[in-house]
Image (cartoon, rainbow, N blue to C red):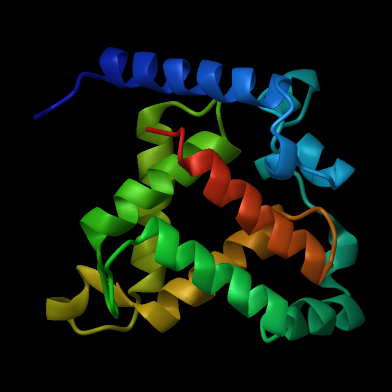
Length: 185
């Protein structure tokens, strides 16, 4: 079933309204504790100037910070958070993640992290990421990725979006993302 761009944009607006409502309520144990993540997950974050996904922190790319960021990938708490996210978001998947599964989950992630993006822009960015993830694979395997590559992609997502170099922040990022995905369509 094809959905027109207007219908898709309306659906995204509805989801964004629901997410804003949720953010305004006290969600108890699901309430975001980290102020930097509260700001990151604020659906109105990009209303005051440069949009977050176009911004960058040049300090993250120093030799020392690049090593710190790389080391976080093997932090036990970070690994567990990513694995828990995979289990919840990709229910029942053992090792192979198809393009359709990837698109379904990352559209929800995109709606949460880039609530103002239109559906075409979002799907284009997801396709570019997927193509990058499958680069170097034989043509007959370019329609899926394995769980290890998915783990790497999700770590990269957190590394790009988390405002600080901090294992606990990445853990909370995935916990928050997992919770918000329940309401993202």
